[in-house]
Length: 163
Image (cartoon, rainbow, N blue to C red; front, side):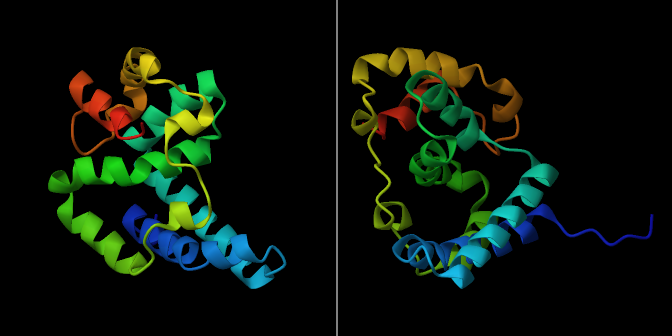
């Protein structure tokens, strides 16, 4: 085929720009169709990026939170992403730097749109940690895509960040 292909990273970065630079306005003013349209396009780009690259530890560790505690997948992704990015940082510094450059200075966006960041706000208790670690570690279809292998201790560390 003579079709030009666009790398997943390009879609991911363009999608992140659109989302991070419009989410606060779309959240604050539900009638702002420009901001909501940019969010929609950003979400589409994110979907295209995921199709080309697969999802990783963020999504894998989100599944048990949705399955047992009924936390929306997007919300659990939002509260996990910063911690997983920090964990993965040394294995993908260049790629993360490009993403950070694209969305800078949009920091603390999860808090700005009032997404709870601690699991106890969803009724998850620290006693549930063993269940989460076991269930999260079983999401091997997604964990194999992560740029860094996660041990059970790594998974526990990431979930502990949410308490």
